Figure 1 (cartoon, rainbow, N blue to C red):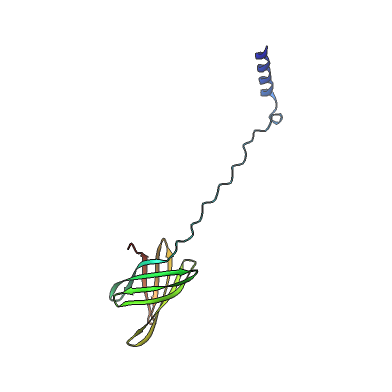
Figure 2: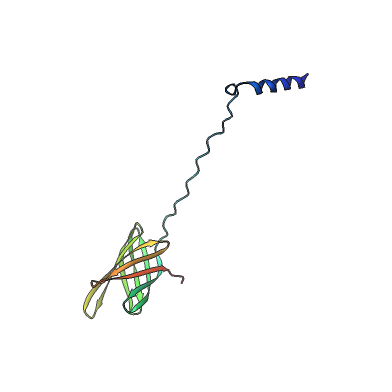
Length: 139
């Protein structure tokens, strides 16, 4: 008798219109968390810099410290080292290097863009622009 009752209930439920059955909607999918956007890595540290001069490539070492947007550091090349000061914001780097030369005080302006952990840019020493690029130093 019990088995007959279960079969009858099963048949009755199967023949009811869909609206009469309790809703078995699947809940909306939970909102997927957005992938975290990585903050750009700090530019602080050592960078192997190559300047493309008329005399060929010149290898230098660019060392930078970052305090907010303010950049300080040094460039060390075959002729010695010099201090730099500038700014880094929105993946754009600008800095100047001032030094005394036999012809008096000189200033070189550098500008570059950070992309894929490498800089590309130009330097301007008042007589034209020269391309440069830099990658993180492995040492």
